[in-house]
Length: 179
Image 1: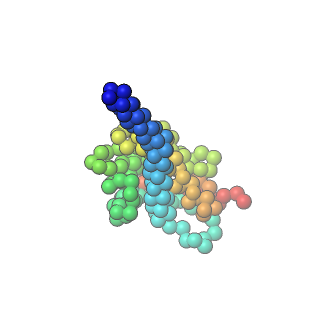
Image 2: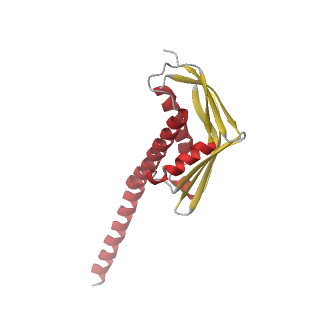
Image 3: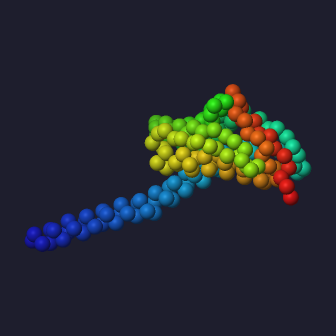
């Protein structure tokens, strides 16, 4: 009787370890990928809406100003279709870009600086503070922001000359990308 009970407990323990392993090595990476893809899609859509370059336009040198208030208003309007958080807000100031996510009453804040590096948008010194960092690390959040801007610029055949943060603004100066 004891031997059967010990074998049953051992089998149950082994099943728990296998389930935990599957969760950590299979489900968690898939969840992280899904969060990154959703964030990238949401931000890319917002960048495209804020820059609003006509599809047939010839690439030309220009200055685009992305405004915090317009960006946040659009994010609020589209919040039901953005599955990663109940609230996403962006704060722009000369000293930092800040992305704030609220999910399940948990707030996570990502903070960094922006730059133009070799014709591409870069987020530097990104830090994260909050529980959501487990699913979207500071580096991944920086990558999502960079992908959103750089993907749009590449699609428009543009190269970034400078990126400057101001009070409530992100100013992007662009020029045609070399052929």
